[in-house]
Length: 62
Image 1 (cartoon, rainbow, N blue to C red):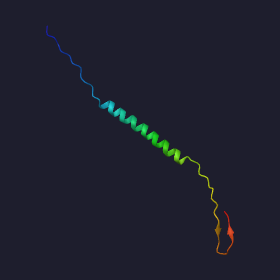
Image 2 (image 1 turned 60 degrees about the vertical axis):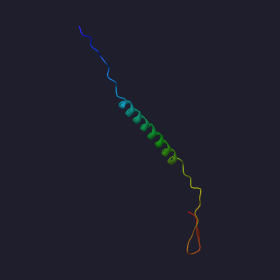
Image 3 (image 1 turned 120 degrees about the vertical axis):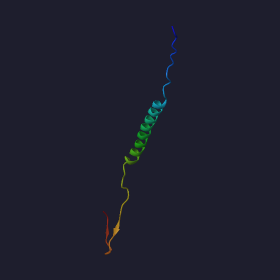
Image 4 (image 1 turned 90 degrees about the vertical axis):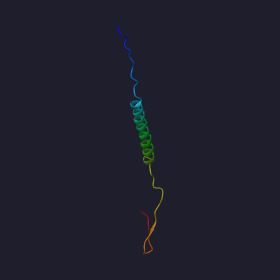
């Protein structure tokens, strides 16, 4: 009876590399979005007073 030599196929690393890139992309996007949200979520207070002088010489404050 003949002996059969069975060799396992090597699995490709490509699916794991793609998965890692997708996960890194998602994490990068979430970090970027969090930084953008923190910058725009800061309350903006108007602490300046505007004084306008008209041509008639009177002063108005809004």
